[in-house]
Length: 191
Image (cartoon, rainbow, N blue to C red; front, side, top):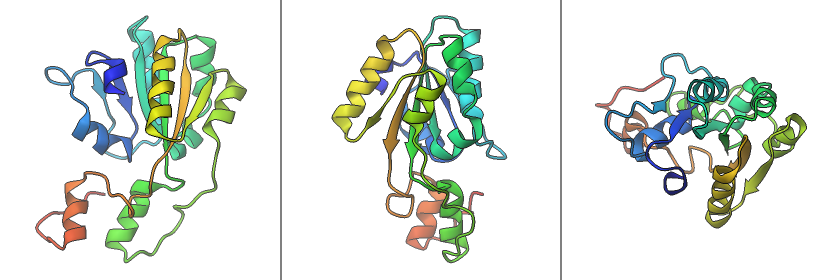
């Protein structure tokens, strides 16, 4: 995505899965002022609407929005707004079919007692089509690369659906979680 969008792209990420990956791997110029992430109370769905705000505030600039299927369930209505306004936003939906961040906390600190973290599957591409933005599902890195390049060349919004593994199978780069998984008790949990 970085190669296709470039270092000066506005990037908006949702709380949860997108944030640690963006913070660890996106190379932002200077102080990273073009990267917008919510911290604090984990406002799921924030990025979907925030990407619209960034796009309206910076007309004509392509915005990359990293979100999740759980956040889509909470902020879906704004895809209609992005489509109606023909905003140049690429929504990448990272989908592990769970409330991944919350589930990982339950896995690590509640002995795997899971509650309310495994909702049913949704189809972001089908939902986007019903609201206007075109979309596609990336089943491998080549297809992701193609969909990202196509989205950059569009004038309006688009949606890319990417299945990702559950956090227990492939933990994100969160220091406290890595410490808990290795038995290092010097790190405090992040909730």
